Image: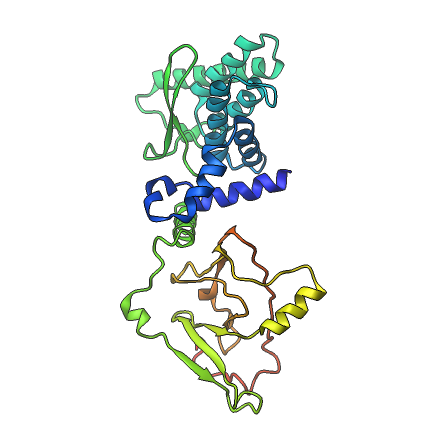
Length: 340
């Protein structure tokens, strides 16, 4: 079941994190959010948080494990998962996100339930040692550079980050840091991908849209002169083309009969996204997406870096067809410009 929870975590992080801000505009998400989030039981939130923790996605692990803890308390039902199990995992996620004091409070909460809990005892000693170390450092200098502490990489992160409000069992109020990991470039790339997948910034500028076109194309090929291919230029830079109705319904039915894959339109998600220049293409039944990943000179065209959005509703089956550069010298001639 771990693979299912990991995939669900991936989908939720892409589509559902900010959907409560825009639910009025996306009716398709209402039933999904209600069924997967609002009605989720404590043990289900724990399973998602645990999957995120195993894959070292501490950002989402902290959120889902805290949600599991809150719902377990509301449900008053520990038959499926105990509160100690949730707390024990939450301690690890909280510490990894640089919240040492809060991790200590959680360890103490475990010991209040089970005074003999070995791991909680070890964690308590370790966290107290780190806090004392910080206190001594603070006495020696007015401003402490938290990044010099070897035990936690994230403790020196900027204060401009997302956080979770938490009130402990002894009424201590904590603003728990929970920053997404990664460099600025990685965070920007991830944000761009997720915004495109949520279709928040789906449109190209009018200037770029003006360069796009649709046409029938046959390249003087005898098989295509009478029935030319429907070609649509969907992205200007890099040049990306979508060929419609390449695979006929009859061919699709034959493939269905011979194999498990089912070729169909994806109800929601599954777009191909080009992050460096913006723009995305949604999957369509029977169509083919084409681009050159090499310049005519044979040099790599890094503009064609692309990613696939997770499929939220439905299924997406694709087949890759590679056309190698060798043997194509007279079809795509090399120019004097190496970047052409």
